[in-house]
Length: 258
Ligand SMILES: *[C@@H]1O[C@H](CO)[C@@H](O)[C@H](O)[C@H]1NC(C)=O
Ligand SMILES: *[C@@H]1O[C@H](CO)[C@@H](O)[C@H](O)[C@H]1NC(C)=O
Ligand SMILES: *[C@@H]1O[C@H](CO)[C@@H](O)[C@H](O)[C@H]1NC(C)=O
Ligand SMILES: *[C@@H]1O[C@H](CO)[C@@H](O)[C@H](O)[C@H]1NC(C)=O
Ligand SMILES: *[C@@H]1O[C@H](CO)[C@@H](O)[C@H](O)[C@H]1NC(C)=O
Image (cartoon, rainbow, N blue to C red; front, side, top):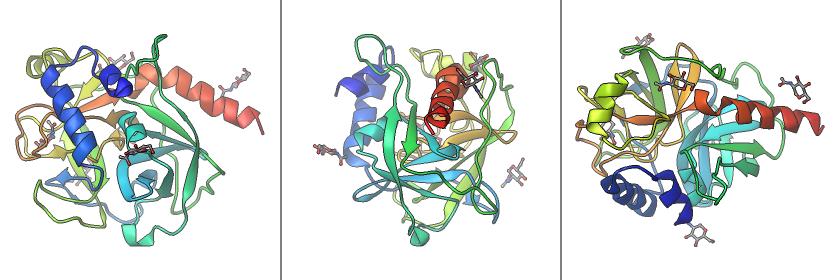
């Protein structure tokens, strides 16, 4: 449990409890709350991250050989991915996880809920698969800015699993307001959706991008409540901008090895 305790450093104990609960009990499926089906030919960067039993996390294609997802998906033994905003019935062409990088402190603790996967081979980009742009190192999102999150699967706590990718519009929540609801939140989160609204993501959507203005600004992270019908705290995403330098470096290194 080293990795999880690390991610949760500084976060409320309650969150740690629910985080571990999610890891233990919610290996499958995902829940986009009060969303809609993703229109055709959009979100072509969406990736479904799998272990040997099925879908465990969302993710986004950030280069022709790299996927950005959440660090907690490592705990779920993520082994391969499927591309595209497809129906899960079309999962026929797996790309295997050949390398993974999770930012850690010197003593091996995970700092933030973010992970970069290197795929075993290059993806052919085109009309059905595309990469999503990453933010600059000083990128800001404004309060109330409209952004999107997406995921596969259940649409409520007790809902049935759907196989089409669904998305929902969420707005960015002021950091101060967010801090009141998550008193011990570390600085590296963006809060959007899930508070003052019935829209958001839930356990299992983790790893998918928070998309603002067509840019992946966040990685959907843990949720406070195992039950997904309690919009009492903001949904939180890891701020990609804080991590952009090592992400670009690794993407660049992979290219140089060719
Ligand atoms: C991941 O793999 C380890 C080692 O094989 C196993 O103990 C653990 O149960 C697996 N976890 C999941 C969520 O599959
Ligand atoms: C995300 O990180 C960037 C870079 O450090 C920072 O400029 C921005 O304010 C952060 N966003 C939020 C919502 O904290
Ligand atoms: C979500 O936002 C997008 C882009 O701002 C907009 O085109 C779409 O109609 C919105 N969908 C809903 C259900 O509000
Ligand atoms: C995210 O937001 C949705 C919609 O409000 C909510 O149902 C879900 O519980 C939230 N997840 C959190 C805050 O952990
Ligand atoms: C990749 O790394 C090389 C050598 O370190 C550097 O010259 C180049 O500018 C880098 N490219 C990008 C896109 O970061």
